[in-house]
Image (cartoon, rainbow, N blue to C red; front, side, top):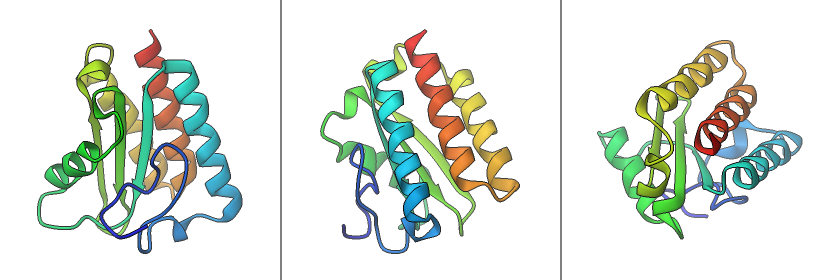
Length: 136
């Protein structure tokens, strides 16, 4: 998949250098976490793991989110480990169910794991928390 596209359009793919930080087993575990979150919340989840293109990480994540098949029902998590960037972008349907403080709790959990060197753990915990809040 070319750089600049979401690393998971729900379940697969990678951008230049993105998922190389994860082993094949970890990628499978991440895809399973996304699948479980989608079933539980009825929202679409995408993870973009790779470089932020441009100077504004939020704008970049929003552009990626806009490319998704159903952006209004989607959550995009953009992580640029080398740039220490985490952005969570959600569509209108999701925002009716997920508050900013709830998204911030998930972001804090992810950042804590990332700081401990646990990229996969942070992503899976964050995805699960987001799905739980959307479902509530």
